[in-house]
Structures are given as structure tokens and as C-alpha cells.
Image (cartoon, rainbow, N blue to C red; front, side, top):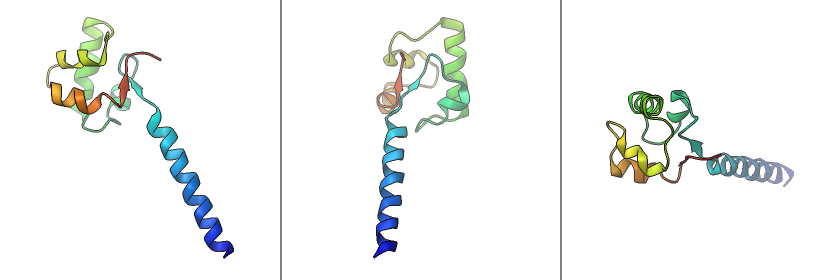
Length: 88
């Protein structure tokens, strides 16, 4: 009985900490290429393209501005929309 209680407690803790981590959005105006690669669907080339675009053109005004990055289309932006932000 005690063992089941401990396992349930550990499971609840791990799920709650995962949910808290998942709720944090990555700021595309400040994230490094390594941080951007934590996003679903973003590999090294896309992450580097986002950083390079930002360095050349300045901060993104909105998440939708990601479509201006070479290799990022509307479908990818739609998939990233819940994971990213342009503000703190």
C-alpha cells in the first residue's frame, strides 16, 4: 500500500513538473539556436535560419513573421504558434 502511494506521488510530481515546463514558451526574439531546437519541428538548419533572419532584420513583431524566414512556411508557423512568443 505504501509503495503504491509513493509511486502515485512520484508520478503526480513528474506530470506536474512536465506541465509547468511545457507551459513555458520560447521567445523567438531572444532564443539561441540551441534553444530553438527544443521546439517540435525545428532542427539545426531552421533554428540557425531563424537566428540569422533575426540578426539581419531585427526582432520579430509577431509569431506569424516567422513565415519570412527561408524554409519556414505557414504550416510550420501554425505548429509552432503555441510553443513560441515574441515577448517576455
